Length: 79
Image (tube, rainbow, N blue to C red):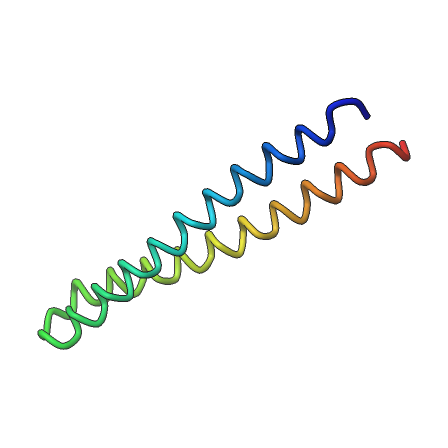
């Protein structure tokens, strides 16, 4: 397939940004969760905990998308 190398580079770069955002979101949510739990703000702690789970799920889905895109690009020439 012509241009699959360029497409692979673009997909890799976009998914790298996605992982960076997910990790930053996890850091912010975990910090907020810790501060809110220690200060007794249980509602904020619950929201921050949900943010941690969303960040972990987003990172997992981003990694799965990278694997899926690489698999599709590898199988493309064989079709």
